[in-house]
Length: 102
Image (cartoon, rainbow, N blue to C red; front, side):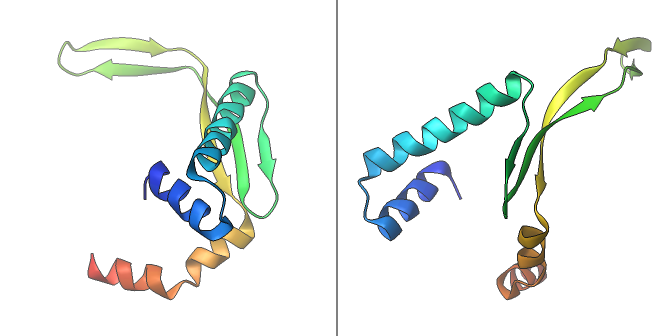
């Protein structure tokens, strides 16, 4: 499912114009990005949390050149779903059917 599909479904279910829904979705994504880049985590009850995870400093290997590279400590964005969300996916028959097909 793409962002355009999400916008279309929201517009159909709410009756709101697609342009307004698109602006709202874009604003939500921009707020998430700017808040997380500012060091804030975002918690949405019943859905999940957008959090900044800390990765420790480590030494990696460049196999083609046979050299060691130091990767400094850094943060990456991460999503942790809420328990309600996880349970809904676990108990979904459609997800089980899709998994059996693949």
